[in-house]
Image (cartoon, rainbow, N blue to C red):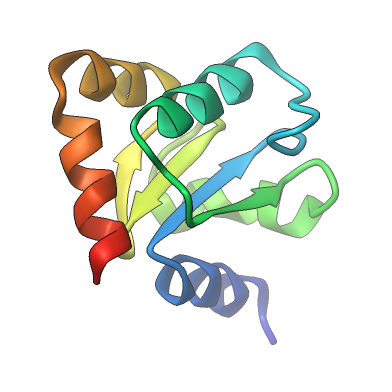
Length: 106
């Protein structure tokens, strides 16, 4: 499977996908750690993550797929939400909780 098809399958195959550096238990950058914490605080239980440090082809091609240059990258229902800053802003506004709840209920 081509890497772009693999990325698309990950994004479309899970309601909540976070492409991050490391894992939720062992994040390898502060931005990824904060994004995971925000999602957990918003009630994300069905969080699927992809460690881009272990997937060099995904790391190289995801910015082309999403048109977003940095990591982490959060997708809900196959749609790019954004990176760490946007995720934290959504948490503070209460919007992330709603988005996560909707994603998990479908």
